[in-house]
Length: 199
Image (cartoon, rainbow, N blue to C red):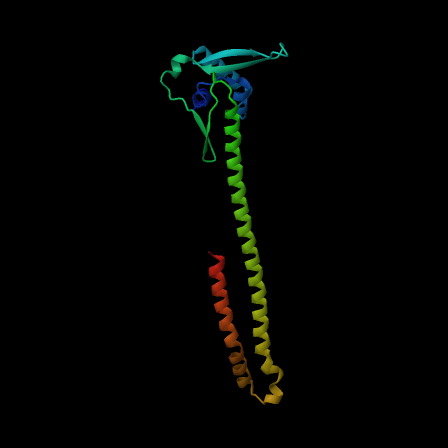
């Protein structure tokens, strides 16, 4: 799709409103201004765009150029009467509409709905992240205590091996018996924790 076709699509999306040349430049900011000017001039020569010059009331020397689609090209083209913002439909302002106070009020209310929805979503995400953080912290602490207990129970027979008169094989067996219950409890704890964190 060349630049002329993209400009046509841009105007049809905003039909029947007129669009300032500055807004066209803003939409196609990645294109060189010379190419945009050439494409607009070509569409004007083709009769697709109708130009208009707006003079500032307070500053007569300030003039701004706008374009609109020629009537014959609009024909029965369906005009969009609303704009969807974050799932909320807002009435469009169409050239020729009378300005009403409720138009502004509706726009403010619609923006407020979007802001409230996004705020609630952010709060939910922050709460979820906070819960995961504390769950992870508790898990690390519990793991540390469990490992310390296992190590403590495992080395206890070695500390008292002289008084217990245990052979090296019996010492290893007694250490294994000491750490086995705690190891099972630790595995169960880690399994339950894994299910909680993955919910």
